[in-house]
Length: 280
Image (cartoon, rainbow, N blue to C red; front, top):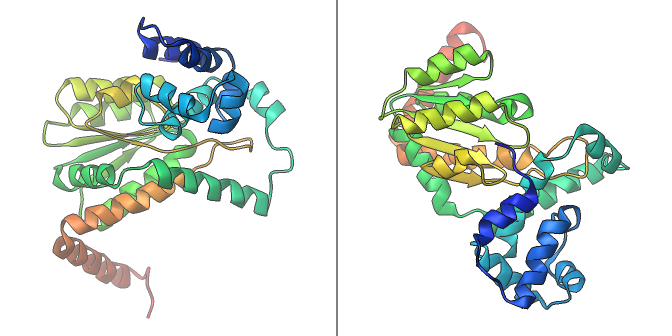
């Protein structure tokens, strides 16, 4: 399902003829993803020889509300195409300690400007109303996925995490029905097995929630998609925006049924005490 950035831009244009000014921005997006993925609107405008308003109009021409929405998708797609050698040659230079923390602060600022709260509400409603939920994740983002599954379980939801063998993931998905839910983490590098299982579940009528850093076939088939930034000047992508979204989702799930969530948390607390996890 990988696709070059230039081919993706071509698909967004869909044979239409942009104006000469818009065409210069489109061509830059095709030709120089390393620049465009991290450029500000002013920087992009300067390189393309246009004004900032033209950059915004180009983003709208390509189907986005503005440059911040376009670049979030564009950047995630660009980063997913990078090989390890290219990442190592461009990353990790002095980004440590407080500088690393500031990378995450910037990522959260980006998330706060692009994420629509109604999307969080819709995703939380999917989780709360589903009979069973299977979470599919792999690699680094199995961490935030585990937080989501465990937190939802504490709130009284039937949620299981599948990060192991493909056969186990497939079995879990096969058992789901139209009143269940699949949640997939489609961020950075994701196994093709997870992509295909998510799409197959959607084809069988199982609702799909995608947490992703770019537009993918999984996102396009999803009932609700949450886009999070994953870019980083470090060797590895940032998991902080995904984790922040998980916390917001769990709060949304609790708000869907406060009484049930509070009862479930009290029950868990009593069980922790009895088995010695919590000692008074």
